[in-house]
Image (cartoon, rainbow, N blue to C red):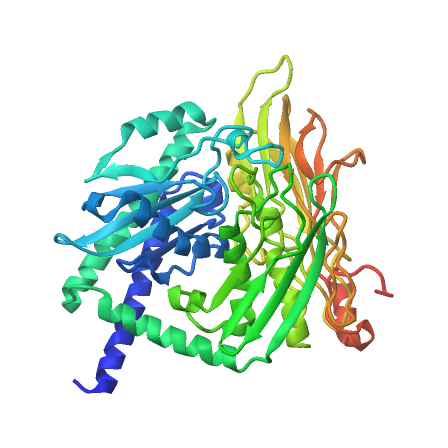
Amino acid sequence: MTDATAEIRMQVMWNRLISVVEEQAMTLLRTAFSTSVREAGDLSAGVFDPEGRMLAQAVTGTPGHVNTMAEAVGHFITEIGRDRMYPGDTYVTNDPWKGTGHLHDITMVSPSFLGDRLVGFFACTAHVVDVGGRGFGADGKSVYEEGIQIPIMKFAERGQVNETLVHLLRANVREPDQVVGDFYSLAACNDVGHRRLMEMMGEIGLTSLDTLGDFIFTRTRTATLDHIRALPQGAWSNIMDTDGYDSPVRLAARVSIDGDSVHCDFAGSSPVSAKGINVPVIYTKAYASYALKCVIAPDIPNNWASLEAFTISSPENILNAPRPAPVSVRHVIGHLVPDLVLGALAQALPGQVLAEGAASLWNIHMSVRPAAGQSGRRAEILMFNSGGMGARPALDGLSATAFPSGVMTMPIEATEQTGPIIVWRKELRPDSGGDGEYRGGLGQIIEIAPMEGHEFDFSAMFDRVNHPARGRDGGQDGAAGIVALDDGTRLRPKGWQHVPAGRRLVLHLPGGGGFGDPAKRDAKTRADDIAKGYVTKADK
């Protein structure tokens, strides 16, 4: 076999491996009980070599899940131990510091054996609707208040499910059928990946993934380092002020490029918060690496070798919160990390980096119940919503788009089916995108009400209310978010609050910042914005 033929064969096998993890992820999408997984794609799936190094990931999934999962598999190998791993096993945790950053995310890892030989691992993660405790919100004072903690342990051994764990889950959550159903969906996801891998290896005649892994990592590492070496050398810093819980939080980053290495440090960020907006460093690393890769090597596959090129550090602070800090809504601050890092990179690469966007998802968790003296359903409902992206160097920002998380919005019909609420309004928010040569993406206006005879408490997990997305290179800031009732009563951007029967919750989601001098915006494009209702003021 010639070198060229061998390389083509390896590339075909690499593509086949990617198709294996895509089917793995689709299994989870099709079988999940929670709308956050089934409709929004809040998940990840991947295949790993016997050392726990990620070979390939599914396209479906969030950077926060994928990149934390890439580190988490190593923790599973260490804690379970290779001598206690058997065919048919599945391992589980929701440990925020060894998984994906908060208790609501379940990570499952399954060893893949060819006969009695361990050839790799499959891993997946998903956000479940409830883990008990205070519920999905920032009000906890420690992780112990935020729900049931599952240390790294066996969900199944040799194919036999740990029924004691299942009973404990049912006794500690508000939606036991949904949660336990999602656990089985996660296990099935890994099982499908394993079966497809065995079919692939049998068809091709492989007895291990070692040679294929070497090919993947060598090509990826070489291409990533080539991109890094082409960058300007030096160090650049950025500071971002955010809403915090009841007082502003400062985030700070310093990006250093030296030869073939890129390092990001978060010294100077605010101290650990008393509320659940803290971020375990595993999640900070995930989104910092994602931001660096988006600019430096966007066309390189995401695997162990490409992630290894970026190093992250932080002293103990809100972006490196130690156990037992409350971390339930770590995504709010975590989703701002890419804008923070991109702001530093924009100084190194002027004119090449998009403006700030809404960044944080405007997630809302609703606990719906009958009003006093009424009868009806109770339900826990989770809804994902997105503001506008920042404008790009040559394009307007995308409206109502989840960047950096990449999750989808649940359809209204699917959300209303899960409990007694009505979504009366969901539309783009005019004038919310920052002006510029390229306009920021628009946010949304959403109105939600309990059905007749019901009321609900909701967990606000919002940002960009007091600190809107900043424009870049002369572009204007995006519009700030607003949280209120339909009678005009302003509500807090974070924490559990109440919507009484007969009232509606009205959310004005923030817009993205503009890019470039507004005076340079094309007159025809401005007229088109007004004609489409994106902008209502002729002087915008």
